[in-house]
Image (tube, rainbow, N blue to C red; front, side):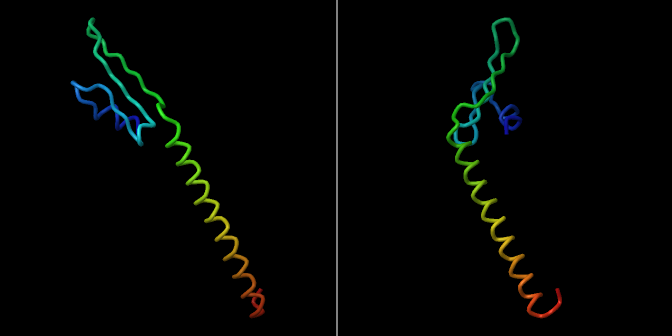
Length: 82
C-alpha cells in the first residue's frame, strides 16, 4: 500500500494517506534540492478493525470446516464406508 502511495504523489501535494487515514506517505523537496520522505502509521483504528474482522472471518471459516468435516465422517460411518 505504501508503494502505491509513493508513486501516486503529486509534485504540488507531497502528502498522501491510504486505508482510511491509517497509512501516510509524505515527500517534500528541501531547499538544497534533496527530497525528504516520511512514511508511517497515522491512525491505528482502521488497522485494528481490519485485524478483528479478519480474525472473526477466519474463525468462522475454521469452525465451518470442522463442522462439515465431522458431518462427513458421521455420514461415512452411517454408510459403513469408514
